[in-house]
Image (cartoon, rainbow over all chains, first blue to last red; front, side, top):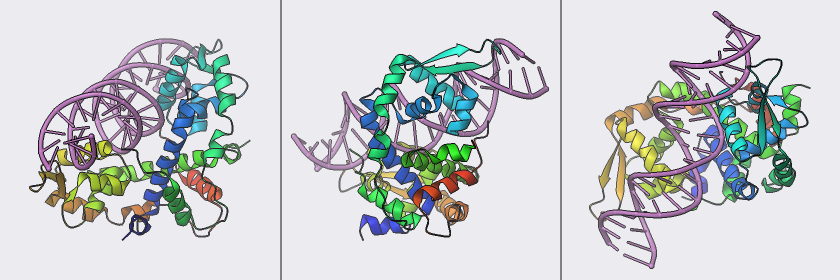
Length: 141
Length: 141
DNA sequence: AAAGATTGACCTATCAATCTTG
DNA sequence: CAAGATTGATAGGTCAATCTTT
């Protein structure tokens, strides 16, 4: 029995997790060359023009405030974003891209779309996920 | 602009990650009541009848040997699996379910399939992922 | 040397608790 | 007290280095 056949009987949610992990791994190398991670790129994307509060960022990325706080810690450490206390409400932290963050973001634009395995036809989700898994390289070790 | 519309422009890979995260979170509570996590359940599933070597488990779960080692650490700590050195090759660790692991596995069977948001029609992957995200509860905080 | 497994350092995420400000 | 943000503990992944056995 092939690996593919074995996976065909797996629950769909498990295939979804596996496919997502493989796609994230595929991005990782390319993004690392820009000093970015996938979580960091999401934030740079969400920041857009003006400064945005952390709660807002967390809600848009659909992660918890705690997660967003640490993601921003790392971006700030890499000098890609800056935090400023909202003058109107000292509880809020306003986040914005630095110039380096701007450059990294521009370089990363389009990368995700290019890297994602293309799926031409509208097939069943399971088959699509299996296709993604199948076309991803296995873990390195 | 609604949250949904905002996400509609996101790269497909990002939607995939987000959908996978939401589905994993949805499992987590139900599995926790059985003393399990999704990674642990995958291992219990893969173990089947006889003992299986860790490399084999890692390959089938498509994770690295390091990851599998730690997942098994946790299962072993919870007394759900046991490690035994292969008499024929002292480098190999053979893993098998304990009786408690057997019970947990039986209780968890079918849970994943039930929890997964059902997708009736073969639509485009993007729309399917958006549907999964849309139907998932946002992070708790 | 190569294979199997483990440990250390790190990233992304969770839950829970805490601190500060309104 | 409620909101916004942070910190601690833990799970699940990665890469890199190491240890043991073949």
